[in-house]
Amino acid sequence: MTEKLSADMRQHMLNRMLEIRYAEERIQELFLENVIRGTTHLCIGQEAVSVGMAANINARRGDTVTCTYRGHGHALALGMSLQSLMAEMMGKASGCSKGKGGSMHLTDLNVGLIGTFAIVGAGLPVTNGAALTAQLKKTGAVAMSIFGDGTANIGAWHEAVNLAAVWKLPSIFICENNLYGEYSAYGDTAPVENVADRAAAYGIPGVIVDGQDAEVVFSAVKTAVERARAGQGPTLIEAKTYRYMGHSRTDPATYRPAGELDEWKQRDPIDILSQRMIDDGQLTPAQLEKMGAAAQQAVQEATEWAMQEPALPVEALLDDIWV
Image 1: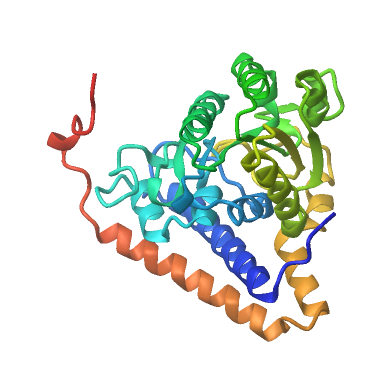
Image 2: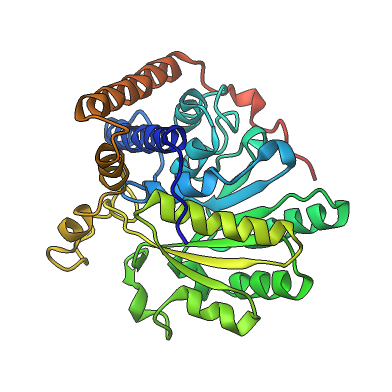
């Protein structure tokens, strides 16, 4: 059952989604301007999963999160600062990974983010390690792994889910099914209709949720977290969502059927939550506009600050490396 959240929680989620949306749009511009190098994977359209997940994580308690290379939104939702993100994107020493990780390798232990992983499926075994630590130390913490639909075809995914199920680890597996694993439609690479259907093979709950609705995601994750903290083992959650942009910066997404993007934009996660708040008398259109302007300003200020920060010096490249 979906939990109706307080006005304050809804506003927090909406603020974070606006911040994520404008940050992603600015990051895309900065790549095109060659201010940010390499590549990037944007989560525009998937913001509800980020905020619904993050609202259930308590880093002070020891909760941890791993996610994919499409992780900017998760990092911000968990509490990473815009300054830390933007500086990392630009390779600056003040970035969350000291400028060494870039777009695909974000880490901030202060907010529970163990890391975003460029290798598909690499985060799940790490999540199990964090979950095993919590189990052995009896901290009551949970470990969460967020991945795309293509990851469920990787061997490490099956091994991690199987191990978590056998050991009843406090692991929570969240699939952001945005219909495409890179350029391949989900149905072309999987023999089952839903990723969550695979949970039955491991004897754990498999839950399918509307990934465009932040409150629905929140409720499903909350149930999984409560179950994990109680020692009842892992849950697999599949959030049906959609990425508005291509897989990466150079992907024009021409493989998508005509009209599919427009259809999904009719259920934009920001619109869904903001309209619900307006209908419930918790928000006015003028207040929404003001919130959007404030988020845009915050993103721009963080961008300008990061651009003035010093780059990582060459002599520091091998710092923080151990064998």
